[in-house]
Amino acid sequence: MTTSTGLDIRRIGGRIGAELLGVDLSADLDPAVVTEINSALLEHKALVFRDQNLDDAAQLRFVSLFGELTTAHPTVPSVDGRPHILPVDGDEGIRANHWHTDVTFVRTPPKASTLRSLVVPPYGGNTLIANTAAAYRDLPAPLRELADKLWAVHTNDFDYAAHAAPKNEKAAEHRRRFVSRKYRTAHPVVRVHPETGERGLFIGGFAQSIVGLGPSDSRDLLRIFQSYVTRPENIVRVAWTPGDLVLFDNRITQHYAPDDYGDLPRLLHRVTVAGDVPAGVDGTLSHVVEGDDASHYTPAAA
Image (cartoon, rainbow, N blue to C red; front, side, top):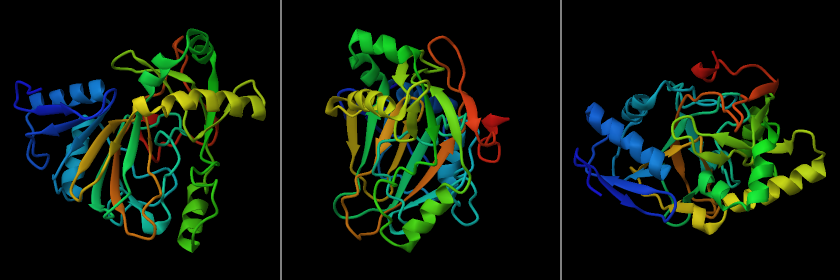
């Protein structure tokens, strides 16, 4: 589809994902173009911009068009001299091979995330992104009705790489930093998207328990709901080339980075847009269970 501003939007997945052509993200974008990109993001959930070859400053400038930026991470250091950029470096042990939504352990997780590829392996190292609204629609009616009523506690005390022993001292140090400040936040299992009104399953790797249930029942229910998120129909796979940028709606997606590239280098830079407080089906807002309000990380917390 070609839009009125000349953007060429091409679907790359049946239920999620589009590639946008005809735009130079390093340029000063007309507000109408930004509006169309945002509309495409709401519809397709994940957008791929090929061969942009941005530098850090250009990535920051582009992402800031969609709202105020967070800092890099609540606990993990940023790129030197760039407090808003998180290095996603396979050599540093940052291999997010677990389905998750970014930073859901704080009360105001990011609205949107961008990843920009600097170094990619010749094979493997893709990113998978899942549509959690499609997953919610896939649920049988009794499961949807149950999910609408449930709340889950999300915590960074479970590192999404914790199921495997650290590969090296760098990975072990990353894990120590990741959990150096503990957060636990209760979010609705079904989040209502603040712009579209869509309902999506708001769970993922940081969701560790269901409020009111014990560990065994929590694990079983989260496993059932998560199995709908990760159905192949609901996933798009992004194969990186250097210079690509991916923008995805963190409010209604999960993502996963397969650890399938051995010791080859892989480096992405992540920049995220500050989000709001999630609301459940009945309008109740998320609340902090343990930890501070993360105002050092996201301006939305204030």
